[in-house]
Image (cartoon, rainbow, N blue to C red):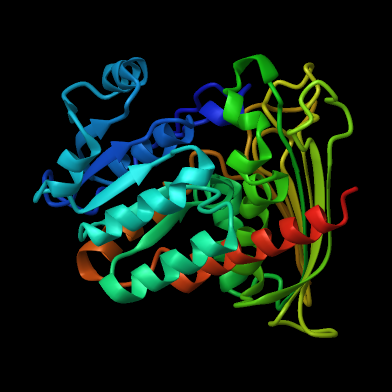
Length: 367
């Protein structure tokens, strides 16, 4: 059974499920650190659900640590981040720091001989990405990313499974619509500072680009168009509340490959039961898909629906509670076995690179 928490605010959306445990207690130990974003709870839930053992937590803010320990009793509170870095019994460190700090923290983690699992977006600059790529090569450690809109969503995961089985043929286009609720009063100061969160195409757009690469099979893409704006929040000029981008992948039919368009925004109306009506529309050479990831407006909430049309029939699939979120078990085994089943390092970095390139294009077009 999947447990949905705080569905009105995406920052604190942290699913949990009765997943298949891939390891015994203490076979895979991890720590949580830098709890600046609520996604740390989703990261932690996913790893614990798959059998991981949470050993330590660290954050400079004692209130955040206290709230975390209340959620996960028995977690040892580290006196410093260095204590976790030096711990011999830790395989991986999960973190959800302020976005501009995620890259440098990851460098420290890998230099300490541990794998890193960061919230998206993993970087706020291409220089940070370059440093992480080099450190991965030098250390052999992993720099994994919590692209939760695919890896922690039932319909999104099932869509990927069906696509890999050839259910709709070759993917020609992916269209993502990703509105989020602003909930401005609940947001920290860094949320309104573009230098700290990286811009809307880096923050929310990283989810979308990652899904495109996963569904289309593309290993690279060209940024065709990108825009980011502040349409409705003049009191917080550092906030971008609307963004859009277009890519062409290197895999698929057509001029260069499969096509991608995404819109991201902070305009979820207060009357909506969930934090955002996230949807995907996928066109294949032999069929189509529509994903209604979190709710089905006016009909059902929570919900995680997948509509599939192929050469023989139409299907409406309710995927909620069905996937077990296999990504986390795969990630644990990847760490232990040094494999790349859950996500390749190249894929994690390419999604980050493309959204950073799109944000740079959008920034260049702003007056």
